[in-house]
Image (tube, rainbow, N blue to C red):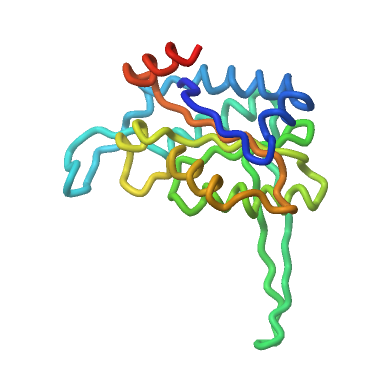
Length: 196
């Protein structure tokens, strides 16, 4: 896979480049090592794409998690509790982040749209408050890749739009959003070449 675009939320690129340079380089190598051609395994049952072979988001997530684990990135899980006085009960659950190394958190999101912004605006903030991470990286598909997956898959252009329009809050941590695709498509390659 290839990194096509980056979005620095709350100076994420600068912070991670300064404090987590080796982890960022390692993550970039992991992304480059994902052979997405093996992950086009899902036969679509959707009316608009019936019978088409699609990239399998679950398999992509599994492959990323396998490669992160091989390089000693750790899954972190915390217990969370809240008391609901109106019903007199305590609710207990957990939150989990895909990978952490040296206080850099990583979430790989090829799932539904709502989870992208949740990861950045809520989950990473919770893990930061617990002292587990100081910054994060969110890996998401570019729209061009999402179009070759099931409908409803999140994509880079959405999260960048939402985070730009939302703005930065005083509780947000530095996050770098990476938009990935299986290959650099012709239009992406042309634009990349012009911006160098």
